[in-house]
Image (cartoon, rainbow, N blue to C red):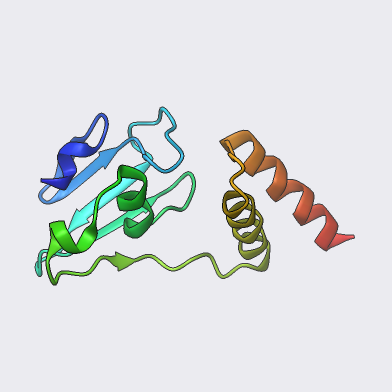
Length: 119
């Protein structure tokens, strides 16, 4: 099962788990929240970096279609707040360039951009 690929996975209730997020590979064992729905799809969200199911599977090197069949991941939408959208764009741009973006860099980029937008 794909959940076996996650680090420090623990159950938090019926069909619910928490784990370290493989996208930003932090050390918080509660960062990644996973819930299995009645239709056997999953809702996956990292509360630190905002990663969703697709991003988690990519970080694990897994193919969603292979593992999930026709069940699609319910993707939590990207933040709607303009500062959050800008932050996400900055991080995705750096990743696309092949640059590693650690959590401290992400927070710094968010702060810098928010200050620019408010000046």
